[in-house]
Length: 114
Length: 111
Image (cartoon, rainbow over all chains, first blue to last red; front, side, top):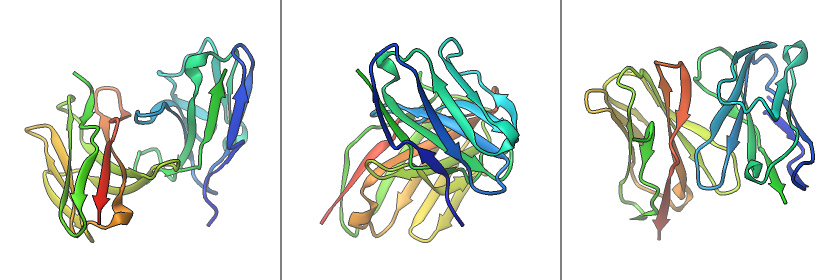
């Protein structure tokens, strides 16, 4: 069974530029999560999708971050414009159901904002 | 008070000994608790989940939950160098139905 795929693995941009991350969850997993993990901290949930609907986006900075999950499969997370404090690893995870049990994480995208 | 609190470490344990990792949380109504392991430069992987008071064992790992005292712990028996990693505690907050991760405890197993 293929795991959660993410791309790119690394991205370096300058502040005020835009960036997008892509995630393809495990086949058949209805729930998809995007997390932000700053160095030395635990992952922080940004947004949770159930199929193609948003379940929780309470911690998503909506003035600059956006996410979509068209057709209930893969998802993109966008930052526009980026700030220095957005430097982090962006993790995508998926699970078979709406519960948080058995979340499977992708390899992450390491973003550096200069 | 942090929502989910862990000692950042590093916790250094000799090989073959028991490593004990602790986590406290502030939401008394929380019902679901998880331990993730994260190797440096890698993504987290789930190693244990626990929902009821008491102990839950899986191989060399034992999770312990005490809801009255609002703490959850992870014991690793017969520690191996491959256990060296950061261990993240995660709690589902009943009040907001969202998952909160602690900052993790860095564990180092010395030969």
